[in-house]
Length: 131
Image (tube, rainbow, N blue to C red; front, side, top):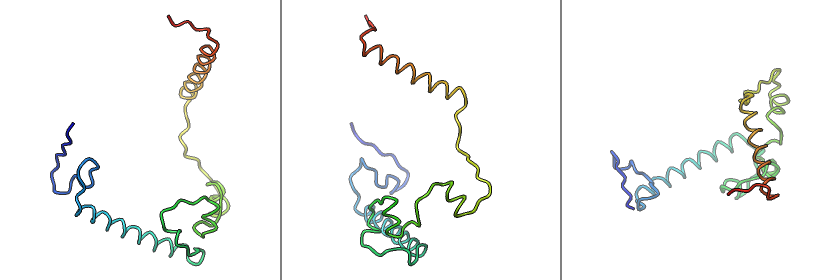
């Protein structure tokens, strides 16, 4: 197999994972990432203010549990969307726009799960002869 990238501009295949690394493009991408990271840090520091606990790990790219994010000052607390709507925003009416499955989708899903269960039981009991 041979990789062929047909593009209309010098940088159209920018960071193509199947092409050799172009050092100029790599430097450009890293510069953009550094700028974006700095902007992110500035926005978080401004938004969180004194609630944010200074730590070398806070902006290292690590992931935090909800509890740890509260401890570090990245979050104010733990709660559901409904809790925030009711208690924080004080919304009088809460609307759930989650797409609900219609009756045919629910039936198909249940029927499929039921049939899979029956088939597994039959096969485990050796009652099906597939000749």
